[in-house]
Structures are given as C-alpha cells and as structure tokens.
Image 1: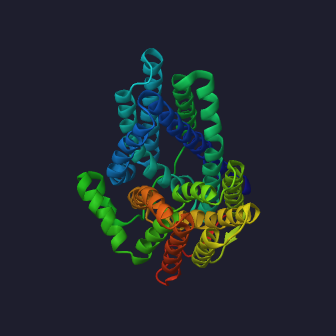
Image 2 (image 1 turned 90 degrees about the horizontal axis):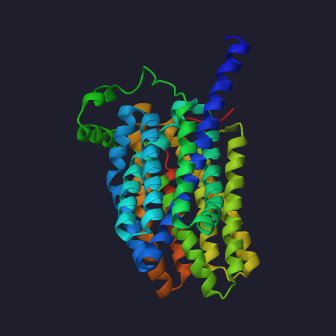
Length: 416
C-alpha cells in the first residue's frame, strides 16, 4: 500500500473517531443536563420526595430492556440503533419542552418522559459501547477508550453548569430545549459517520442470528460469554470494578464530608480532584503507544484503587490529605475503566459485541443503584468510612479475578 493511500485511510479513520467522540460527548452532556433538569422539574411539580420515584421509573425500563438493546445493536448495526435511540431521546425532550412551556411541569408528563428516555437509553448504551470497534482497528481501541473516559469526565463537569444556566435563563422548558439541541448536534455528527463492515471471519455461531427470534439471539449471546471463561471473568471484573464508582463513592464523599465537619468547599475540592485526576488518566492512556501487559496493569490498578478507597475511609486525614487521596483514587480507578472496556472490545467477536456490551452495562448499572440505599444505611450505622472500605473490598475481588490466568481476551492492548 502506498504512503498516500495509507495516510488517507488513517486520516479517515481518525476523522470517524473524532466525530464519534464529539457525538458521544454532546450526548453524555445532554444526559447529565437532562437528569438535572428532570429532578428539578419533578421537585417543582410534586416535591422532592417524588423525584426519586420518577428517576426510578426511568431506570426500570433501562435495566429490563438493556439486553434486548444489545440484540438490536448486533442485528441492525450499532450506528443505526444509536441514531434511532438518540432521535427518540431528542424528540421526547423537545416534546416535554413544548408541553411544559404551555402547561407547566406536570408529574404524569415527567413520568412519561422518564420512561421513554429509559427505553431509549436501553438501546443507546449497548450501541454506543459496540460502535468503536466498527470505527477503528483493535490496536487503537485503548486510545479510543481513553478518549471516551475523558469525554465522560468532561460531560460530568460541564453538564451541571449548563443545566444551572439553562434553568436560570429559561426554566424547565428552556432547559429541556437545551437538552434537545445537544442531542441534535449528536445526531448530526452520528449521521456523518461511516462504519467498517463486519469481518468475513466472524464467529460461525452468529451466522444464524440475523433471522433468529430475539430471544434466541439473546440466549446465543449469553451462551457465547458463558463458553469463554476469560471473557466471563472480564465482564465480572468490569462490573465489580465500576459499580462503586458509578455514583455511590461520590454520594459517600458527601456523607463523609458531613461526618468530619468539613465545609462544602472541601467537598468541591474532593470531587474536583477526583474528576480532574481521572481525566488526566484518560488523556495519558489515549496518548501512550502501547500497553504491553494490559491484564497485569488492569489487576494492579484495581489493587491500588482498593487500597486508596479503603485509606480514604479509614485514614484520619484532614481536608488536604483527603483531597490528595481523592486525586490518587481518580487517577487509579480511571485505568481499569479504560483497559477493561478496551480488552472487552478486543476479545469479543464483533457479531456479539452489542450483546456482550449490554451484559457488562447491565451488571454495572444494575448493581450500582442497589448501593445507594446501602451507603446510607452503612453510613448511619457505622460511618461513611466503613462503606468506602467495603468498596475497597469489592475492588480487591475484581483485582483477584483480573489476575487469574487464562486464555486472554486480547493479547495486547495498544494504540499507535
């Protein structure tokens, strides 16, 4: 292949990854703004006590339909499903903006919005996880996952600020319109993407999935994971390694700050140090050329994460020491989040990637909400630090699973 031809292909591939990254960043920012605005609108319409019920109404269909979303992503292609789910979310929030502008926030409308959004999310999450493998080559997936981690950190930082500004300027109708505008930007970028076709040597068992009933395709995906012990362990590692850091640790930091009598400004420092360090970790992994022993690094980073989160809960440190520990924790836990998903995509046949991604997402999102009430109960009975020690124990189990030797899901995680 000539240098010019190779450069053209590489440039096109990089352009596709950048479009996906832009679409993903705007979409996740829209998610953050949406949940903030929805909570505010429900509290305004029916009081704070109902906010949790409405959020649960949206979380239930997302959990129930997640595996079905993976089947659709594998059958119709992740890009088509991603565009369709983003379109549904866009239309739903724009309709909510129009109705709340005309009639004000009403609880039935907001419940319906939450359910529609949850159904669309169940399709969105497996598709967005399966798409990178169709945009680039396996040796670049670690870099792409590092960029994805950075996008999530950026969205979680910018999203609340955008929500606050939108609510101040236009109330719930204006804020929902801003969410819709973010999804429109995401749709435009997704429409410009071009994906690589599936390789001709994909798993033979997947050949019949195109015409199989959804239930059969789902069972085939679960069977695919069950027959590959290394892949099954990797799904468990991702679930255990991420479920404490999908929200429960942040909530526990709020409780820990109150227990130790620190000011709200200290809480901002703790959360900021955690987020910034995680972003730096994502940037570093997106820049490195090669990770020669990804499984060893995955296990080691989970071990360090376990020690740091336990130290944060037990060590009698002041605000400065706790901020330092949060920064180290953010940097450490960012590594397995990137490597785990990169190894998952490298070690999974593309024909099954939507279903495998859906399973990993379900394990993470399905377990994480259960920890929120547990965090409150443990903090009330024994203190928030004890819950953090428990999170460290979960990470320790994940590190042990990651260290188990077996047939590797991928021989090498690298990026040019």
